[in-house]
Length: 77
Image 1 (cartoon, one colour):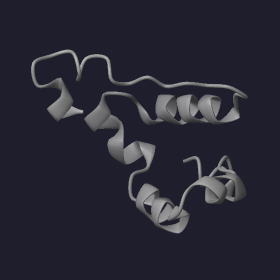
Image 2 (tube, helix red, strand yellow):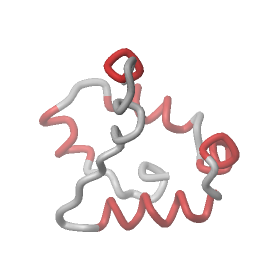
Image 3 (cartoon, helix red, strand yellow):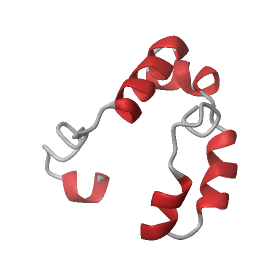
């Protein structure tokens, strides 16, 4: 969604990471409509959240709470 919407600054990414074409190809296989049911969030909400995150000047997403809060957390992460 981010690539298709032109919300990825390819030049900025290429300055800090390699493999952008591979990431773009991989991401193309997992559009919001395909993953919505698996993640429990509808495609429109996924698209809106992704766009909001990409357009904000400063953002953070912290997603470890839960998975790492158990006996086998490091393994799960």
